[in-house]
Length: 155
Length: 423
Image (cartoon, rainbow over all chains, first blue to last red; front, side, top):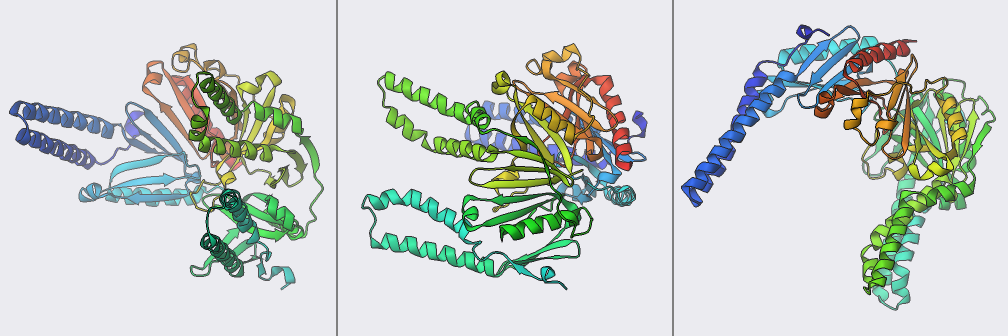
């Protein structure tokens, strides 16, 4: 399991997360603006400072989270790792995959990204890879589907 | 085409069972108000109309429901406005239950319930005449095993019978009864302090009712529990008013759990649960017992439980490995209980803060493996390895394994599970 074999989400996911953090910051700044308009200037300034600090913190956290995602296609199973505070590593054998979802929310879609989600018969196995370029997501889906068929096992 | 392969209807009295239950509930709720002279003729007419509507609906639903066995599938067609035609492949049956609520027993009826793997849910045939239900059960079991459908059902060999006294005793030492005791103590305290116990009693009435129902269900569920070994798997029977007979075919067990609640410790009693495949689905008509884990041995002695576990997971290893001492800081209460191990066929873990919970998982059933390392665990250089199966509730987790070892364990378990799957 050497670290350089791991595949990572698309670099565009970082941009998407920057945009998300930016959007949250703008909402917070709007609240600060309202405080500025209806309360004193000092209160408004403090609120704005807090908003910017919170936005920056969120941005740093989201970026580090993006950096923690990784997946590795091995001969018989797929490894997925994620998380910084709570680190998770999932091993999903190809033979146990029941179906594969490819989904894309509005933000993901505007960056031509998609999330691949693997489902096994166990509700607990939570295996997804967010922020894959759409071509890579399609490739992974097809490959996993083919591998799943080749390895299929019953319950 | 033989006679038994054609479309069948359920028993005509089927709608009477759920309706009868409702009527009883109505009677219990509204009789006091009738007796009290409250409510005029209009009220009575309203109730009667509601009752008639219920009976009518039940009759229509009976009229439009039919079933047949066809080419290895059980087909059920139902629905008046929105027709639904369901097909249940018998090769995926995980367990077959015969459920007989009190009223159904009065009418000589039984419900047949097939639990399916995956997200297939359950097939319900409610209700059939008992003899027909028994015959159909044997036939479906034979079909699910792929053997000839006319194979006579072999005799089963009884293994364990839980005495009623033990059921009652175990129930006295369970959470719902404790709630009652605490409640009574509070009431007594209030009365002693000069307060009005009646006001407090009224406040907690809904909780008490729920509690009483929970106690009754547990008692009914555990009453007369027997376990028998049959060639097609294990058979579990129980019930005082609503009886339940369940067959779990061999090789369908996803996980086995042995629970020793702390209150039962002085008597050495324990409970054995079995998890089979099938996802919990949120549906209106889903019955309560679909949602909870099946206790195959509601309360047994240590020896009985161990014998049963040996039958379910023969030759499983003892949980010999322990987490490192530094894990005490993260799990101070359960540290002394934590243990785990695995061999080529089974993974076994123990945990529990007050009582003790031991879990066995056949490696052939492993769906995925997860290693989770929380912040405190990272500080202590330990991690938890979860062994996921298609069961509903039981989670086998090798808790607080030494960090380096846990990575090796994930690799090792992955390989062992793969080998087990292929063999």
